[in-house]
Length: 365
Image 1 (cartoon, rainbow, N blue to C red):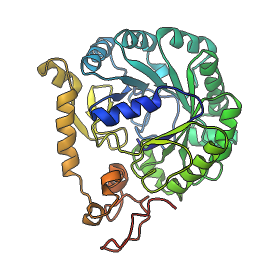
Image 2: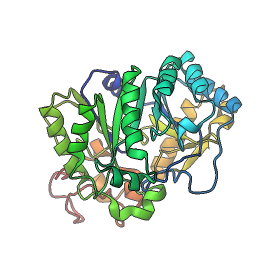
Image 3: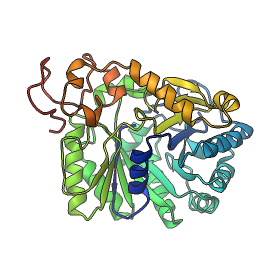
Image 4: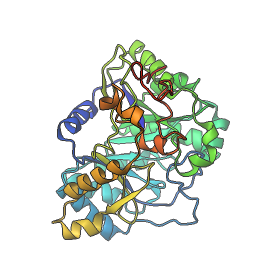
């Protein structure tokens, strides 16, 4: 996913990014424990709760997958869905994953994260909770998220996670509706004690395809504004999982990453059935984790690297991108955005479109 995270307190994020850059192997997994969801978000990359299916991963398979991930050298798993707080074995999963040496995070809509539930998850080993604030206008936020109580529940969830001793992360999916307000959203999140703020690009995946006209007008430009806000308010670092940022922008704050971790083989998403996707948004099944582990000594790491290399090698990258002096940094940008661009280029690369490159790739506005 094309996410960029801003940190105001020290945590292990920078070291994790550096570690991945050194090792270039599968390190982070988003695990969709359930397809059930009580929201209907306009930009849901997984199209959760739209197909009439509400399958959970059976506990026996979840337990097996924890062992597979640990034996494969995975460092971190983010519990996702659907809505992971609807997964009936969540605390049990967190406890077992932690015991196997995994860092465990939670990506939730926050609706069910009461104070008590937050304390239980912290006790089980959860270290971070992330949920969305997509507008400071409660009615607009609720409309986008498809739930009339979404805003108040999300704010409460962030406070509950913080009070339980976990890192609270405010997330915002950037659209035309909120890109001018996102600095204020960050400011609000900081005012309630949120330690990290994050933005996602509304990439064309899942239900976002139906609402693609809502994608922001200047994703990279908005990131620059957020960097300025972060620097002015004492943030200590930025971690970018977007390959176009900060390839051509050097803010006055340390920015780490700037790569597509999925293309490099360091990040993936696993479905309820154990299918391993290229990434959370370009949901091409590469293999099934249970099947590969069964025949590969309980590890998926080598197979994952091989499958990613093959898949990335088949993706179309225009010749003009390969000739660009920034190609070694961005590798052509986001594969999901390229797939939905008429000319096959990442549509956030604003370098002029002529066939021949005459200057540096203008990846910032």
